[in-house]
Structure formats: C-alpha cells, structure tokens
Image (tube, rainbow, N blue to C red; front, side):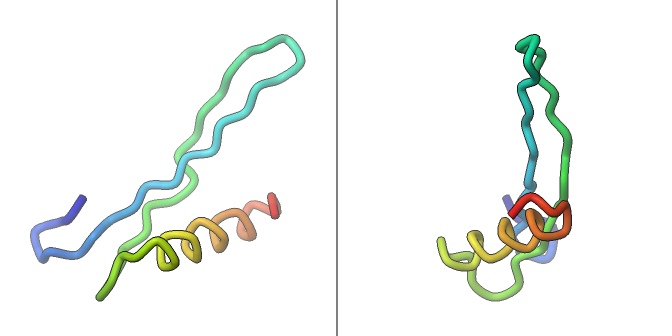
Length: 56
C-alpha cells in the first residue's frame, strides 16, 4: 500500500507453529519503499528483517 506521500509500505509478519500446533504471528517490521518496489526490492527488505531477527 502507499501512504499520503505515495511511498509504498511493506509489512513483514513472522508466523510460527509450535509442537502443539499453536500458531503465533507477530509484526516484524514496516518498511518504506522509496523509489521502486520491485520484487527484488521487496526481497531485500524481507531479507534485512530476517537478518535483524537472526532467522536467515
């Protein structure tokens, strides 16, 4: 989606299922996509978020 300044925003969620099949979901980050928002740009933002949480 875009905000008031036409900047694309991406929300990255992390989901987990434990051994009891309980599902948790947390908002990991909201990233502003300045300029382009190609698949490669989105991939890089998701990669950065995963590295921030040591999930790479």
